[in-house]
Amino acid sequence: MEMIRRKRAFTLVELLVVIAIIGVLVGLLLPAVQAAREAARRMSCSNNFKQIGLAIHNYHSAYSQMPRHGTGTTGTTLVDGQSTSWAGASWGPPGHNRFELSALVGLTPFIEQQALWEQISNPLASPQNPTSIFSAMGPNPGRNLASHANNRYDPWLTNIPSFRCPSDPGVGLPAQGRTNYAVCLGDSMTRSNMGVYWHNGATNSQMYEMARESNRGVFQPRQKSRFRDILDGLSNTICMGEIATDLGDHDARTEAAKNPNTSDSWSHSKAGNAIACQSVKDPLRPQFWATSGPNPASLTSPVEERRGYCWARFTPIFTGMLTILPPNREVCNSSPNQPQWLATGESTAPPSSRHQGGCHVLMTDGAVKFITDSIEAGNQNSAQVRRGGPYVTPGSQSPFGLWGSLGTRASKETVSDEI
Image 1 (cartoon, helix red, strand yellow):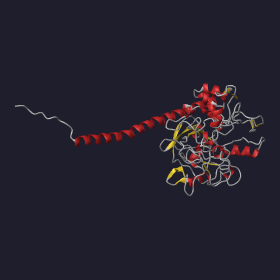
Image 2 (image 1 turned 135 degrees about the vertical axis):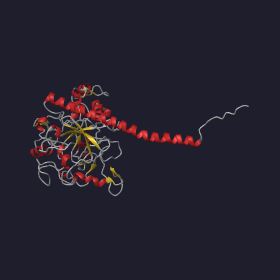
Image 3 (image 1 turned 45 degrees about the vertical axis):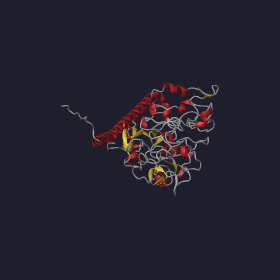
Image 4 (image 1 turned 90 degrees about the horizontal axis):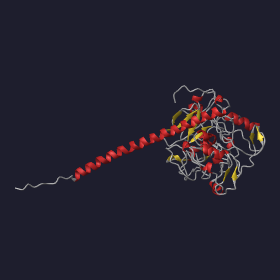
């Protein structure tokens, strides 16, 4: 008698159960993989910062000062060793940079970018026009892409891996050379965009003293900074902070909005103005600016002038951060009528990142810390440090709590808690 063999097969129910189990496993696995990848990117970002901290210490050992934030070449009139003439800030060859180079430029030979530094520190021919020679230290880093199209200056367009955080997806135009690391300028917006520099060709002692009193960070625009000046202690003082670069999506952390409460930059440090731009955020997406509706944000700066878009330029929107607003808060700028002041004016410029819940900061002793968005930041309605008027008296402790005290170098503030 011949036996009948039946073929075994999966039933439809069994197949569906297997598919469901695989789906659940994939659903559990993907977030874990993404979290692991982000942890690796975050570690790489922290390591980049540690290398920058080491470069700063090596620079200080070599020159007995930190790299100056707001340096370069320009004009012929000198006041206190610095040029005060805005003449000669031409956009094409030979060009001058009008003391607008960031501290990151001076760090290039200390982060294994000696070849790039050689290009910057020596006369360099334009690739399009070999007879057009840029002066040593290059043209103004504020020149736009249209100027580069005619006479390209490659160093300012170079993306340096050590200045990029792997968690930040921003790449390419309209940025020039992006950076995710910015120097700490303290806890007051006053003259954070100019420092002691005065553009009328003459000494102005009031403006000079105002800058000296208000620029309380480790880096003082257009002034020398030394470790010996940091009286609060290197381990208690923020040297640099992480910033996210703009993605063209009206993110309040990466695109500057015009302060709706002021008509000029000189009143920007009054009480309440640091948080004035909160009123023009999108109520449905509070991380973004409102672009329509009854109370839209004024976003009139050129598309090339966004957070972290030019590592070589020293103005706060590009390479500066302040300890007024906590990390990942909005960028609120001074508001004269000229749109370009949204990129070059005084700014709240808080640090930011693509990490969850906070951002990295580099302490002046070289340690890298992760600061959460919820750090204690004092009275956000407070005025800022500035001489005269309704401001906080120069020499006072920071009105912005623990966060503000970490950003000042010599306000007699100590940090007892672990951060």
